[in-house]
Length: 213
Ligand code: DC
Image (cartoon, rainbow, N blue to C red; front, side, top):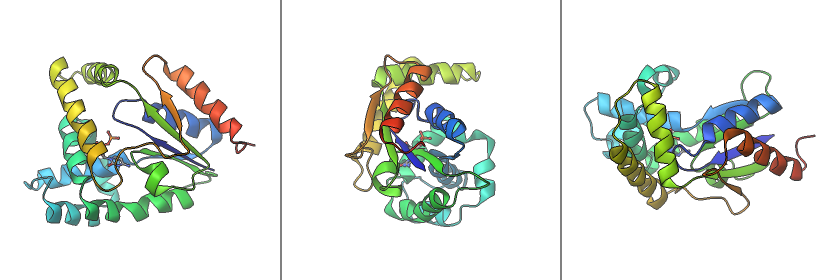
């Protein structure tokens, strides 16, 4: 069983992915972390994340240790991730790992949930269920602001909103694997729904697809 979850930043993909994984006994992969690890590696080397050669080399040399770095979740890393993600050689280098995770999930998992931007369209076009989670940019920026402050980080509301709009535009307008719902995706707007309501709606969709046994 493979579940693909896509959507913009702070829409609630990660929360839904983890809950579905727990419910169905599936492995979970946050594919954004792969792009974040590449972005951080490039920046730490002193290179520009839009430099195709540097970013491709970082993606090709990515190892498990790169995913265990503590500060992958920050906003500066997110911006770098979104820049390296527009480079075709970076996407190509990360594709096999993601496909392999879906086809051969680790441990005894009987399937996988992957979340990202192009899971239903590119990584797992044959996924059993595709869910596109979205919310207004204002709601998402408010959620991100709270997350940052809960982690004790300084954050300016107008800056968070601005950065989120910029990242949305970059992710949706790139030529290769842009952020967009697959034609057969269930589109769920979470602007006015809490995590429980989103989980319930996703479960109902999955059951309607007759794949959950
Ligand atoms: O999900 P996230 O916010 O951690 O992702 C960080 C960036 O990585 C996002 O702005 C675009 C890129 N990304 C991507 O292009 N494709 C994916 N499947 C996942 C993330």
